Length: 360
Image (cartoon, rainbow, N blue to C red; front, top):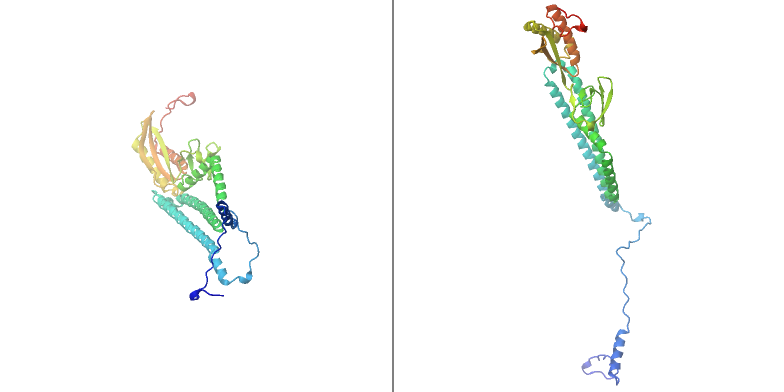
């Protein structure tokens, strides 16, 4: 075989299609040869909505290493432990804050009672009201502690559930629907509870106080967050909802005032009668039976009124809570006996008793 000059290899020449006498047929034949090869079939790509199969087989424990365990612990478990620790720390700090507020309120109450005029003479008696206030404040503190504990634990639990991957949307939606239904169906109940909470915080009244609610006047026998139990002078027990109390009058909070009006005849010596009354109230103030009841010596303020042939002399005494009525009765009895000894005459009756002849 003869080679090409200069030793160069021969280049392959592509075959030239055979031409026929008809050029239209030749063009159709070339086009058919180009399109006769089928195109490659495309491979379908997986849809984004298709989920990968879940491997439910047991993991191979032979490949478990301490490094893998450490990496797992540093992830979700460590985050859950951090959330729980923060929750308990927040609960502890809130409880300490509540204890400090309760202690501050108690000390302020003691200072306020100590500033009452004459409170040093009736420290034991006034301390009863202070002890009641301390007990109510501590009860309110315990209630606030329970509320904060529930709120903090609830937030911590929801945070842990979100970390684990449990969807909170349906749960929060259900809670929201239940809260709206409760708000519409129990408006009066919520109003009563809120009024009771503020009533306890402000120490408006307590058991043993004589109050005026506008509808009833009586002695408080029981106080709760929803209702107040009051017994009137006729012995009837009233249950008043805290949310329905618009105004409240406490007649025995802290201390009470005993007001005694003593009438004497118009022709009697006023200065002599006032002197006799002052001697009586001075002896009564020194009496051991009234040392812990009277906060200060009763004050004879003087002539209160002149009418219908009588001169009225008024005495004002400050007593501990709810003890003014006993002081009034004792003071009238002692002044009457002192007037009899001193010869001070009471005013004559305007009308004859039972149609008889008036006394001369």
